Length: 408
Image (cartoon, rainbow, N blue to C red):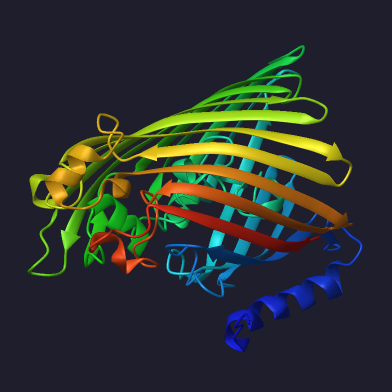
């Protein structure tokens, strides 16, 4: 029998009731002031694994520790000045324990140069423009599956909040002519990396006590699209240089430099969509932080290929293969295993995903994904303390994710 605690579901049920009460039969809520509107969503997920844990204690009875509830408001205070903000409650087991947070809140000033070109600036807590899905990943309605490919977007490594937004400014521009359009965005901002997952990822140390400081984060994305997104090409890059100041005498301080380039392509047809993204995370840690799993200088590799088939008006099927290799020069993990005495499967992950979604009523959907996974390279140590002990977790395992969602 599945075990569901009242405390784990109370907040979600309350939010669902609120959304159903105020957002029924609507795609947004008119606030009665100019063009100001509110949108919201409430999603409850379930995960089950045959080995390891994903978003909570997902083995045996499975886990309901996967929920996303948000509400956002937006509107113009002047014709070219937009204000937008979103509050979010999210729970994803040990990989996301922040619960309530401000997902984004910004001022967006847009200046049309002519009929073909526009420039603008966005200030505040902004979404980081990275890849095809990072700035639209906050709700399942804009994700191709229940979860994004973990090889590229790293939810399980507790990096969701650090990746999705930052505090600073973004400048952007767009130029269109005929069926063609070019766009570019550039961010300079303070990263949200003083969380357990981000600090652990950057330092290579679990529960590292201390604080990240350093220069602002740089994020850039440039792209081309044909026929308003029928075909899209993007190149994104993240440039991060941070200093870790330890607050413990037994954990050293040090620096971490990270460069993450990502190439993206997508083709959207009437019933089919084909997507691929390929990236490398180039990381350099100071010698004081290189005692962990990976060497002081390391380049990982991550990619996926994906197809979506809209075989009926309310139904979409998904097929995806994604892969992550902790070291591009050691894809089998053999060298890393010899150096660390950990099993080879700790240094890669290969995932074949079959998904199905059904928008069974207006504003409602249910989605389910089945994953067959070889490796544990992107799993969270918070949910899986056994990863750095003995067998290093299960090398071959299955993951089932199901999510029910309502939006207005």
